[in-house]
Structures are given as structure tokens and as C-alpha cells.
Amino acid sequence: MPFLWTCLSLNLAPTTNWKTLIFPPSDNFERIILEATYEKTINVEMQEYEMAISLKNKNYPNALLIYFSSEVLFRGLNTITRRFSFYPNTLSEGENLITLSMSCSTSNDVLAIPTYLKTHETFNPATLVNGVYESPKNDISLINGLLTLKGDTIYFYNFDLFAEDEFYSYFKLNRFKFIYDGNFIYQNVYLLIKDEYSYYQRISKYLNSDFRQIPLLIKVDKEGFYYFTFKNKLYVEPDTYLMSPIKLFGFLETKNFYFPKERFHNQQNLEMSIVIENCGINDLTIKYDFTYYSHLNFIGNCQDSKYCINVSSPQTNVEESDFEEIILC
Image (cartoon, rainbow, N blue to C red; front, top):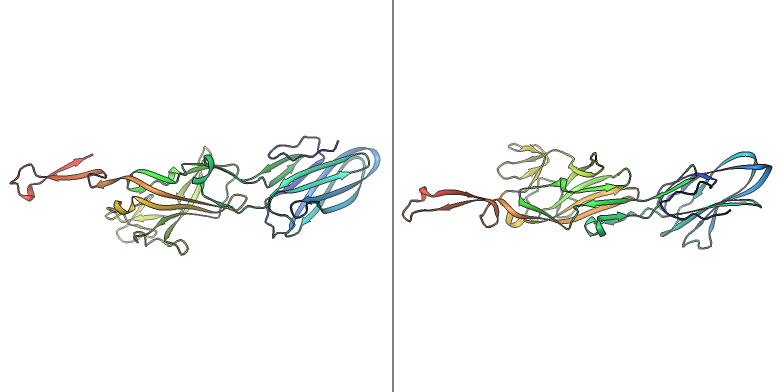
């Protein structure tokens, strides 16, 4: 019986005779060359069939014939493989319904597959509902008659609008993790930090903005969580905590990114971003804009610091050199 299968992310019933088609996400300016395989066993000496492949979308609401041929099937197993093309600007935004049909006077095998162009979407994980991003299902895989439609699905953890820290010291990059359904690919990834007071001037600028960029890498742990690490070595000046991407005299190698000492008053709220360019099967841009906020200075004024030094005089006539130093927590 003829049937139409348009359910997303589900397998076809095993009765289909359309066996193979691989159609990855594509751009509209591309010429897309595809190959489909049809298999059928017949019990008569020979039978004439018509193979047709058509496209229906908002540009072609009445369907556009992409490929047509007359085929003769003989008794036994028949395997037919044909190539066909989608020329540039044939597909459209929104749903594109590709229909594969093999018909004769007594039967009609129809397989309809929805797909979408690459999205090239840019989004901020902090604004997603429940931290989940899902693209349209536009990665077609028909293998041995089983159809799978996939897109980009990403689950983000701790990507909040405010990245809060207990105290002002160094940036904890490992707080951000995500899970991706498949093998996550990307082109570049950066940590951006706004440099309003020129504390990070040894680090290169991001485009022509007020932000400095630090290259990162994305790795995956044993549990399948993707996380960020610094791509290159970092160096810190131990007296000021000023950072450098290159080795300078007096600077020490470090695995952390430190904030400058004694600058809590103007670095407590700091605009930052993590940018992932051309990632996933849809060439996405993930731009996680957030504010780094530290509740307390690590060492400093006793009113807003984790640790402080309180200097007091137990006697009214004690000289200044006799002041007592007390460490408070």
C-alpha cells in the first residue's frame, strides 16, 4: 500500500523499498548532488515502473519535479541507484518536502521526507528555556530502509546571565558544561572580557570592540559533558595578578585567569562572553553574554572581603609602630 512517512526523528517501517539516501544540512547557494537507492523483489517476468523525485516548499507549492526516469524491473531482487541534483536557490526557508516515488500500474511506493536549510543561527544559552537548544531536523540519513532525521540538540548547564563567585580572585572556567547529541564540531571558541580600565591590554582585542579575547578549546569528559579549557599558556605577574599570553620577565605560568589585585571596586561586576563560532551541523554561533559577579574581595577591606587586616591601637598613647595586626575571617 502507498504510504507517507513524515514523522521526525523516528525510524521508517521496515516495509519501505527506498533503502539509502544521505542528505546533510545545506545552504541555498549550493548545488546539492544526492544519490538514492531503491530495492524491490518482484515475482513476474518483468514490470515497468516510473521513478520520480519531487520537491514541495513555499517557492513550489504545487511541487517541482527534480528527477524522472522509466525503469524496468525483472523477476527477483532489483537494486536501482540514481543520482539527482538540487540546483542553487531551489530549496527555501521553512520546510522542504522531498518525495521519492516508484510506481507502476499495481503499486506505488512513496517516501516523503521533510528537511530544512542550515540555520546559521546565533543565540545566547542564558536566554533559552530550560537551557536547551534544538534546531530543525535537517540531517537526513536513510540506511537499509530506516530513516533518521536529526538536528542540533544542545543541553547547557550553568550558563546563567550572572556567573556568581564567592570571592574575587580568578575566573572558574570549568563551571560551564554542555551535552551535545552527536560529535560536536566547531571552528573557534573565545573567552571575552570587557577591558574598560585597560587592565588586560597585553591580551589581543576581539574585533574592534572593548573586549579582549582569549582562545579556548572544547573537550569532552568521560561522562559526555563538553567543557572549556584555555588553548594556550597563560602567565601572571604574582604581585599585581596582571595577565599575559606570552612569557615576560617576572611572570609565572598559570592554568587560571586571574583578575588584577586590589581592583575589586571596579571589577566586581564584569561583562564577559564565551563565543563559539561555526559549530554543530548548522554552523551555529553560540554567544554566551553574561556578567561575572564576585560577592567578596579575597583580601582587602573588612567590609567587603573574605580575609582582611584590621589595624587598631589597644592603648591611647601607644606609638604608631606598636599597632597590633589582627587577621579576621
